[in-house]
Length: 317
Image 1 (cartoon, rainbow, N blue to C red):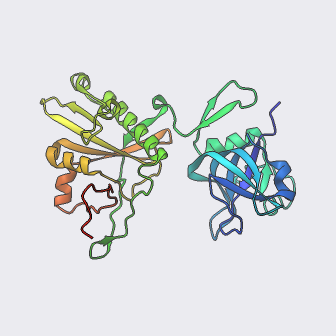
Image 2: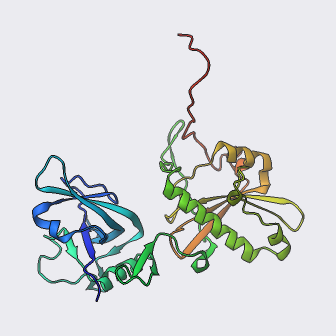
Image 3: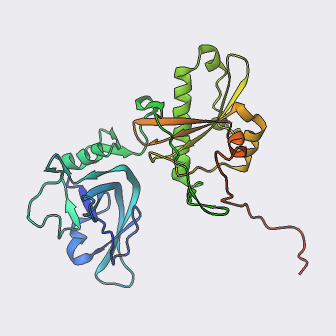
C-alpha cells in the first residue's frame, strides 16, 4: 500500500509569506503542521494569474520542518532537489482535473493538499521529468533531473535557438546573461550538453572521424573548447558546447579562454547550442566561426564578469 507521502504546495503570485521557491516553504502551524513531514515529495502549484490557467510548475522534497524563530504560529519546510518544469502543466487535461477533487473549495482554501501517488507521478510524467524505479517500497520512484543519454533524441533545430536583441541605446542591449553561470546546476546542464553532442557526433561522423573524436573537457583539458576531432581532410575541428534547460537562449557566456581559442582557430571553431537538456528530446544549433561573426557584428559581446585578486603591489595612497 502506497504511503501518504505526496503533497501539492500552493505558491501565490503575491504573498505575505516568507517563501523561497525550491528552498523554503512558509506555512501556519495550526493549519498545516500535521500535513507536512520530512521525506515527503511535493509539487508546486500556482493559481490563475490573468488569462493564465492554474498550473503545476516544479518538484521538490521536504528535508526539514522547524518553527520560525520569532513566531509561535509560523513554520518553515526546507525544500531540496528542486526541479522547475520545462513547461508548466495545466491543472486540467481535456477537461479532467489532475488532482482528486473532494470538496467544492478544494483549490481555494487548501495551500497544502494531499494527492495520491498515482496522480502525483502522472503530473511529473506530463512535465517530462525523469522517473527511475528504485525497488524501494517507501520510495518506489526517484525523480532525477537528467535522463540517461541513451534515452535522449538529439536533432538539429529547425529554427535558430537564439533571438536577436534590439539595442536600447549606445552600448546597451536588452539581452541578459545567466547570473548562475558558475552554479552547480549550470555545470550539471553543461556536462549533459557535452555528452549529448558526443553522442550525436559518434552517430553521425564517419568511422575515421570518430576514431579521432576527443571529449577534451572530460579529460580536464582547458584549451577553450570541449570536444575536438579531425575531419576527412585531416583538418581539426574544435567544439565548445553551451547548454540550457530552456527551449531557447537569450544569450550565452563565453570565457576569455574560449574567445581566445575562437580567434585562434577561426572557421575550425564551432559552438553547439543545446536546448532542453533535462528532457528526452533536445535540439542543437551550430554557430560557425563565432570570432568572425563578432567581427561582422552578427553577434555582439559585452563583459559580464571580472576576476578580482588582491594586489601584491604597495598602495600609493
